[in-house]
Length: 316
Image 1 (cartoon, rainbow, N blue to C red):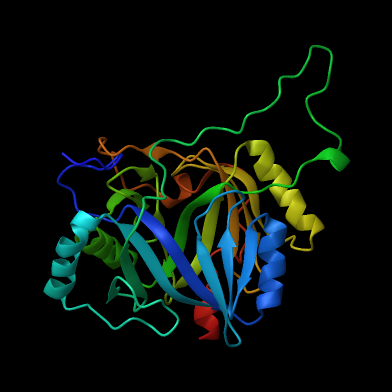
Image 2 (image 1 turned 90 degrees about the vertical axis):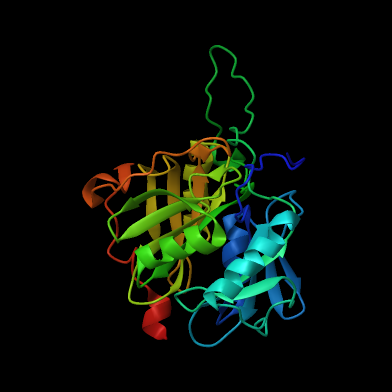
């Protein structure tokens, strides 16, 4: 047995999305967007780093790029005892690469079937070991209203990164790669249109997901908040900051979380997410193939036409 909390015995697989890295045309505008969203945005030399309030982990980095947004690479955390097995898988499939220029050069490097560089690095598990709980609220005395006035609503500040969804020209190929190389496990899918995968050592319903498109790219990053009120207040917060486009508020079917997506200046999204399903390390989730019309959202507004538009690929 191992001393690592939540580790599934005899299962080799990534335990967390350590970081995702992308480039944007304008770092100042990106900083304005993610600061308004409620993240802790820090300038570091030639990049912006994204943290959540009070959490020491760096979840994402952005660099100045060309005329379009571009996904640069994705970094996953692994346990030290899985390093050799992961190296063997990379050699077996002949997918090892040199570290890309924007990386720190550490860890194992490979290229996924869509051509995106992937880093595997030994580090602490930053995905949760149990289902996250709602934020604490003060009890309301009898005869008093529970909702504060608009002027007293606190700024929504996400607690952690929940997951990242990527575009892919071949969703099922990416599922096979994630299972065979990264050790992730399929949670649910809808044909070859969208698929959701969780970590074997305990994670939210999905650490990563893939949606069908003409090419690879970043669709959205999802950030955990403490209540459905915070999802709604986050939507209002972004509208007031000049970012009105998005989708929500609603509730998903696959993952069950309450959501609101905000469209960034380059066509991808940041999601406020609350109460997503959790898959413990000792449970085999009953994955299934769901009909598209019955799997996206239980309630909420109709999906906007631009929601699955891959502007990153169109610009490329």
